[in-house]
Image (tube, rainbow, N blue to C red; front, side):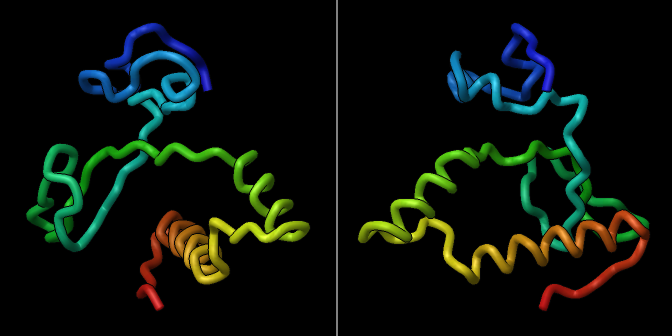
Length: 112
């Protein structure tokens, strides 16, 4: 991810980004991907496509911190900490990735 100085290049509004690590982790607007949903998810970024009747728009990835995930796994295994990401949530995320691959191939699949 390349770094730029202007918050607006990352899609930041007001003090949402600020400075420091959080700002550096944000994606640049020019690499945002297309979010397509059957119901409106974000009125600021999506518009209704009259042909497909789907809501389409550019949307950034959510921020994440992978190191924290692994640190939590260690403390959950050796101590009494609770795991932040539950098994069901992990399974759902993998399913989203699988559905995204199908979508990229031009196929559709129902969430199940």
